[in-house]
Image (cartoon, rainbow, N blue to C red; front, side):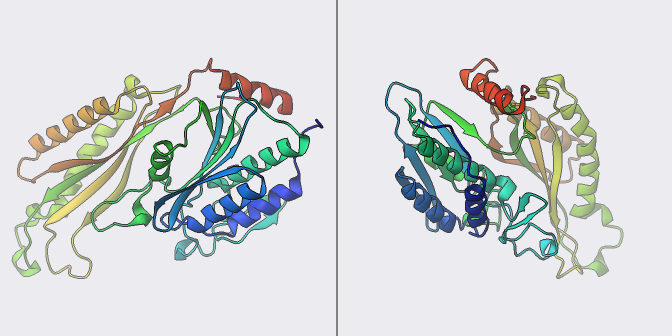
Length: 349
């Protein structure tokens, strides 16, 4: 057995191939194909999971000698953007075209999270080069459909089926292990937990009438009604964010006013009969999602009582719970020790 060595050129070359392989959410099969090809070349057992047409997970398994715990290195292959967005066309690094500048590799998806997948691949290659065989199985799970998005209204199809769609399929079709590392960017810190998300839609109703007949009826406009509701929501947000029960390791449970939709831009000669406001409410990992749901809907009922004529409704349409690992877990200890060995100090939290 020889010393472990990371081949920098090999690492950058493979990461560049990953960047150059488009894998926007809903169309990840090309990247899945690259993962499967790579795993086969590495001598791994390959499990292809066809999640739906054009979308797949790939699980590569390096079998252990036996008697040890299994470890999964998990990463998503889908990217937040396609590279075709006009508002990103002038921003370097947001296209599937890799380039190196001042010692850094740039390109679509490299930080989120093809860079981690490249590191997983190189780590297993380094183990093979050094002749190291672990007792437990070592897996790389490349999953589709992780980006934070979901189907709602007219937004339908694979492009909108994210939020762990691939990971849920993975763990119900053989992709399980004793421990798992998720290599998302963390500023070099060990992240022991993460917040969950609850997405809420609030809606107001109003009259649908021609501009000529709207005089004196501005108070029945659903957008203007939502303006009042939004002001009330902005008053509520600090009560959620500053609630000690919603804090986790010094971080607040942030609420984002993420979208608003009302009226018809192609026909503004009509008053909007319906307006929606969308919120992303972060939930700490130790708070059950059912409790968070109850608390948020209590706020919605209060708004409905405050604005009884607005036809106010609330719909929770995403509940993605957070997760946490005990700081005393052996995996955390192993990561701490490895980080200290490489950097000369323990990682932050």
